[in-house]
Structures are given as structure tokens and as C-alpha cells.
Amino acid sequence: EAGVVQSPRYKIIEKKQPVAFWCNPISGHNTLYWYRQNLGQGPELLIRYENEEAVDDSQLPKDRFSAERLKGVDSTLKIQPAELGDSAVYLCASSLETLSETQYFGPGTRLLVL
Amino acid sequence: LAKTTQPISMDSYEGQEVNITCSHNNIATNDYITWYQQFPSQGPRFIIQGYKTKVTNEVASLFIPADRKSSTLSLPRVSLSDTAVYYCLVGDMGTGGFKTIFGAGTRLFVKA
Image (tube, rainbow over all chains, first blue to last red; front, top):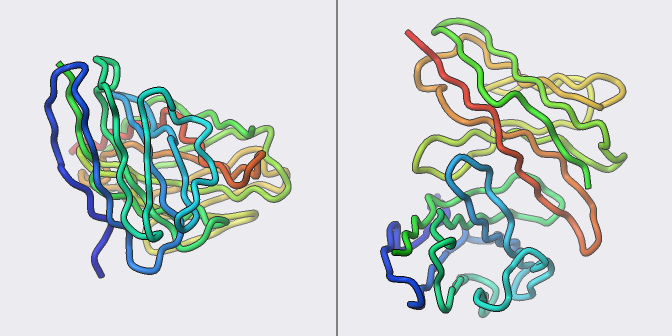
């Protein structure tokens, strides 16, 4: 069974440029999460989807970050414009149901903003 | 929100049993305790989950005392490949639904 797929794996951009990350969750998983992980720290939840609905985006910096999950499957996380402090690993995870802590993570996208 | 406290780092030798304790004094009645493992350049991987007493799977054991204010992840006979960061999470039914809060984790370094 394929795991959570993310692309790209690495991205280097200059500040003020836009960037987008893509995630394909495990088939049949209704819940999708986006996390940001800074160096030496644990992942920080940015947004959680139940199917196509964003049910928790309280930690998403809405001035520059946006996300969508059209049709309740794939998801895209966008940053526009990127800032130096956005350099981090962006992780996508999915789970079968909301009340389960068993989340399956993708390999992440490592973003470097210059 | 239920927070967790873990040691920042631990060292061990191959073949030893490693116990990592996590404190979660504010755990709520409906909260579960979950542990994840993360290798460099990879996303976290689920290890084990429990609510009370003891849970064991092919990878680890999880010990939870009656008051549930702490939990201990036990890794039997560690190998070099167990070198990773281990996160303790407590499921939190906060406003708006289930929240996942990762702490800084415990960096386990297994030496030969």
C-alpha cells in the first residue's frame, strides 16, 4: 500500500516568491494534516481537514498561507509571499478517522527561503 | 491543552532496554497517549498508543500508571537503527475537535 506522497521533496526560493506543496494521502483516509517542523523541534500543526472541510486552521498564518483540499483527496499548501522564517520542513499526514492518533506521515518538503 | 514533558536526550548502548518517560499531568479523561518515532529526513512514524495499564506490540511496550499522569515507552534491546527522536503525544479534545500537539521529543542515541 502506498504511503503519503509529497512533492517536491526540496525547494529553494528567494524571499517574497510564492511556493506550493502538494500532498496525496493514503487512499481512504478522510483526515489530512499539514505540519511545519523547524529544525530541532517537533511538528507544529498548521491545518487539519476532514474530507474537504478545514476543521482546524487556528495555527495557519492566514496572511500568507493558504491551503485547499478539493474533492477531499489531494491537498495543496501555499505560501505567498515567502519569508526567511518560513524555512522549515512541511509535513503532510493522513489518518483514517479524526479520533485516531495514528497518523501516517509523508517524507516532507524541505523549504529553504533565501 | 494537555502538555507533555520528556527528557531532551538519552544515550544507550546496543542490546540494552531503553525507557523514555513522558509527563502529562493535565491529561483529560478522553485523552489517549501516543508515541511516534522520527528518523532524520523522514516524517514521524507511529509506534504505539494506549489509554491505561500496559500495551505491547512488536516494536515497543507502553506503561501507563493508574493516574495516567505519566507514561513510559520501553524499547527492548535497542540497536543502532533505533537512534531517532521519540515524541510523546496526548490527544486533546480541544475547541473545534481533536488536536495533535508534538513537543520537542527525546533524542535517543544508541551507541555500539
